[in-house]
Image (cartoon, rainbow, N blue to C red):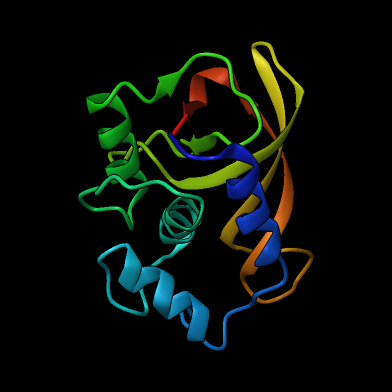
Length: 152
């Protein structure tokens, strides 16, 4: 089991990392490689996976650089939870398209929980007020039906 405090600390440590170019940068390229992807790919899941590895997660996730890969692992190994807590991953489905998972963040705080949830997350490959994509703290208000919570 992953150490929750270490996971949140790993994510916080990287707050403010920004892309040098689209989906690329020294740390970002490393996170993508850790997750089995090549530099230049979307990297929110690679960031989350790399933070998991830094915090003691010893499992091997196939397709770890994708939100769908994280959810598939979570379903296979009973990591899906109904009620989130700090240190869980929140995998979001915003588009209701063919690919059901769009983005992932590490939950730092559960502000409200109900049919509509407010989560404070730390996310990679996200933007903040016109800044370059990077690692930022976000406040997400989402329907519970459009998010999967994973506890590693």
